[in-house]
Structures are given as structure tokens and as C-alpha cells.
Image 1: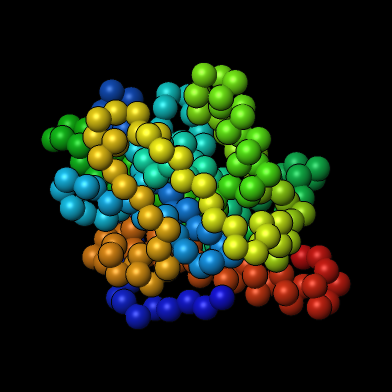
Image 2: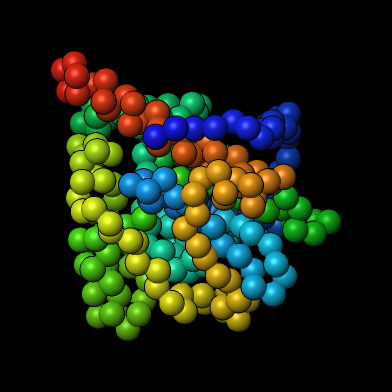
Length: 239
């Protein structure tokens, strides 16, 4: 696994103070979905307007932002997915509950965007990193969805004790992630196409947007996790 920083990366803006009541705030989530074994990422294409993008959208009322990212990823691209824990610099504290083991890998948002919806309304968008569902869960969750009349079903989370090497081995050589058809929930989303593209090709198509760095930084996290796990297996096997 390798990374590249051939393109100029966006920088974070200065901190701001702003206040919005619930009637003037929309919270959304987006996701970069990687197929780790083949170093590819899911990128969507608007078949009418002709632009490339990562799946994203508003989270549902009462829905966790990470879960919303997974759901939007499936609805807009057709690929079932689950958040992927990676090593990531962040400012969230570790849980105080000693029964919850700490880990160097997290599923925190990798980028956050703030965009105006109108002169009085604000949109906050959290970007997450995910992976395509493994074959066993792909079949399980699809059957669960069919038994619920097609209702969206959450894919079980990435196991805490699984390494990326073990995850790749669980697929079998030559496995191709399933792309489900007609998963869009409205006429606009029915216009979306989706493709699993090599990392650098995806970055090039998304160039000039934060989404390019979501892919770049996300893949860097995947590679760093793999390196950390390989070093750990050569030592005591634990972090």
C-alpha cells in the first residue's frame, strides 16, 4: 500500500464563533468507501450535470452521523459499507469507562465542512472513512433488507480484534464488491452513477474539492493502519 501527495492539499479554516437554532441548521454526512484489497474507492458521477463527487446527504432525524454516512453511501452509490477505524489525529477524549478498551484506530470525521444553505440557514457536513462490506455480511444484510421489504439495514461494525490483513483474506482472491441497483431514494439520486476507481484517479476527478483530500487522507490512514499492524505482529501482536 502506498500513498501520494502529488496535489496541493486544502487547509483548515480559522476557528469561528457561530450560533444556530434547530430551525436554521442542517447536519449531513458523507463518506469515502474503500475496497482495501484493490486500493480503490467509490466515486459517484452525475449523469446529467457531469460532475464527480463522493456520496453524502442529510442525516435522518435521530440518526447518528456516522450511521447516516453509511446509509447515504449506500443510497447514492449502491455499495453497502461500514465505517473503517483508522489512525487519525483528533481532539476527542478517550472514554472514561475502563471497560471500553482504548485503540489507536477511530471512526471520527476526517473532515468537516460548513456551508450556508441560505442567508439564515447553515449546513454542517461530516466526512467519514468506510470500507465496502465483506462477502459474508453483504449476503446477510441483503437478506435482512429483503425480509424488511427493502428497508435499509445497518451493516455490523468492523470487529475491534480484526486486522486489515485478516479482513482482506476474508474476501478471497478476485472478489468484487457488490453494487446494488436502484438504491437512490428520489429522482435526483436515480441519475447518479458510481464506480470503484484507483485512488489517484479518484483524487484527480475530485481535484479542487475537499473530497479529494477526504480520499487522499483516508487512504493514507488505511496504509498507516496496515503498517502499524504489521509492526505490531512482529513484536507482541497487540497495541
